[in-house]
Length: 426
Ligand SMILES: *Cc1c(COP(=O)(O)O)cnc(C)c1O
Image (cartoon, rainbow, N blue to C red; front, top):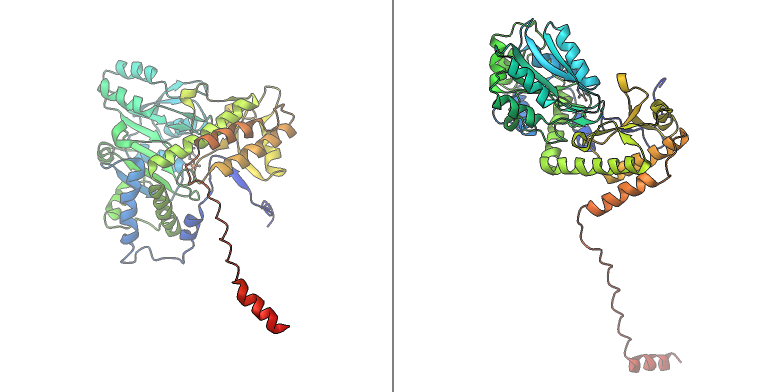
């Protein structure tokens, strides 16, 4: 097809941090005939799904919502259902995604107190604390944070933000973008005191894009009664009215729901904690490779390192887009580009979702070729060696290989008989 990337032989491997590869079981689950979303047994799919998605957010008290939309709509759903025009919120910008949420808040009529943070760092909890402590009248209605800034490969300490809010007894809602963290990096909605968690389908949930996945705390849910921001398609009330019986207020994408069912089953089968450990290991290998290449991550210190995506700075006289261009056209893998402020300065390796050591080694080996082709002087094989060493040492324990024993030799037939027979033949 015109414009379609030929991916034969092999396939176009996705190492952009989203969309991610769809596991075969999820893909198979999505190949279904069109289904009647008002069928009497439809709730048998929907009700357990809405219940089980809560496990992924680690919430028992929260209410989950599935919207036929993307993460961007998720931000709007969070704000429009809890805020009124002119309400003040506090946020910080340290990458393209935290920037976009800030911009969306401004565009829907909120007043935004924006703290600028260097790109490569995370949520400045102390600065937030000072601002919130000075807000004696509690005019700040929400604190908005991006848990995992996908543009820079930075993970913030959301537990610390929740703890701080509790400590200073500020009633602002805590809203968190966990699009590229939930299901891959530990996220604890209830324990951390998160009021609205926003995610999407095409990252850790390993689905195509097209579903916004959210969780509201009881406190956030109650705000819909007083929130005056305009909303219709994105109104959670319509979902509450129909979800309670296992239906949706409009036509949902049923294949996506089937896919989500399969994805959640895979994640719960592996075990959430095991999923996090796997992501951490794969990420560590990538970081060791980056170090061995003599390059630096955009994340400015280890405490900000993201286990779902690594943004890698190229030397100042080089353009990261050339690496991405070569990787795509010559070797057929997709890397993440630098966005906005870091365009041309970084390329990103996504390591979330359906990945294992073998896939990461393929990514790292190919990135090495692209780096060398782009004239970036790294030692060939150095990254692959460093990651491989780490993966080997930390890999899963398997049963020792036991070579099958050679079958015992058959006893030679009794000599007497043989000679007799020979004699007869003669
Ligand atoms: C991918 C992503 C989003 C959502 O983007 P959509 O394209 O609207 O799905 C939001 N925030 C972060 C941190 C992301 O990585």
